[in-house]
Image (cartoon, rainbow, N blue to C red; front, top):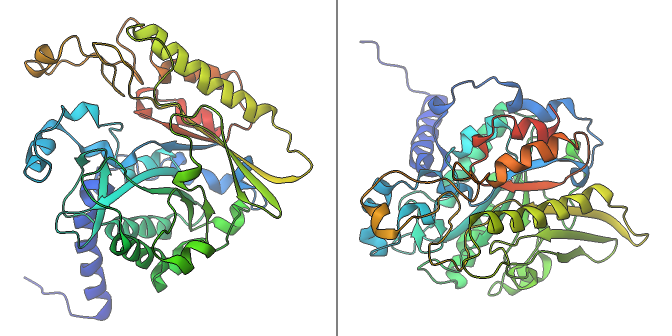
Length: 387
C-alpha cells in the first residue's frame, strides 16, 4: 500500500475533512449530492454583478437545520433534552444544507443555542437539540468550502438565538458567537459592509448576515453591529403579518417582513381554512413586493416572506408537515398525513398552491421566500429564481 507523503496541504485536507464530518448532521455530505453540477447550483452566475440583492428572488429554508431530525435521531438526543413531542413537530425540511444549496436555495434560517456542556454553540428548533457535537463554526467551514467551489454565488444567513431552546443567553454565548463571526477566516468569507445588502457582484463568494439578535452583553459591539443588516429580535413582532424594520437610518433602508406562523383563524377551523389563511397572508405580502415602489426617503426595500407555518389551536393540531388524526394513533403508525406545506391528499398544501401562483408571476420581483419542504414541488425553486 502506498502511503501518501506528508505535506501542509495533506494535513490541511485531513483537518477540513474532520470538520466537515463533524458538521455533517447539519450540513450534510457532498456525496449526498446526486447531481452536483446541476444548473441551480450556479444560478447566480447568470445575473449581472450590478443587480441589487433586494431586487432578486432568493428562495430560502425556514429552520434549515431541522432536515435530519428523524424519530431515530430524536430518540438518541432525548438523553440531553428529556422526553419530547414527536419529531415531526420540529422538522421543517428534508434536504440538507448542501443539497439545498445545489438545488438553488440561497437563504438559510439558522437558530442557535448552547451545545451540551455550554462550550460550543449549536443548532436548535424550540426545545429540540438538533446535533450535540456540531458547532456553528463547523457549519460555517462547510459553507465557506461550498463557496470556494461556487464563487459566483452568495448565501444569506439569518442567525438568531432560539428562545425556546433549553439553553441560556448570556455573555459567554455572545462571546462565542462574536468570535465565530469576526475571526480572520470569517472576515475572508463574510461581506463586511454594515447596514446594507448592496449588489450581487459585491457579495459573490461570500456570506451575507441577516442578524436577528442584538449583542446585549458586548456593549461596544452592540452599538456598532459590525456588518450585515440588523433585524434584532426586539424589532421582530411575534407572529407578525406585516412587520417593518428600519435597518439603516441614513440613508434609510427598510425590511418588510411577513412571519405569521400561527394563521389567525378560530380554533378548530380545520385544515383548509388554516392553510388558506396562511396562503392569503403570504401571497398578499408577495403582491406588495411586486408592486413596491420605494418612497423617496427609502434607498433600499427588502421583502422577506415566510411561506412556513407550524401551529394553530385545533384539538387535532396542524404541524409544518403533518396533521394528526390522533396523537395515540400516530404513535402507533408511521403513516403521516402531509398538511401545512404538503397538503393531506385532499387539501392542497402551501407549496402546491404557491407553485402556480409564482408561475403566473414569472419575472416579477418577490424578494426572499422562506419555505418548508420545498422539494415537494420540483419546479418551485426554478420558478422562483426564473430558470
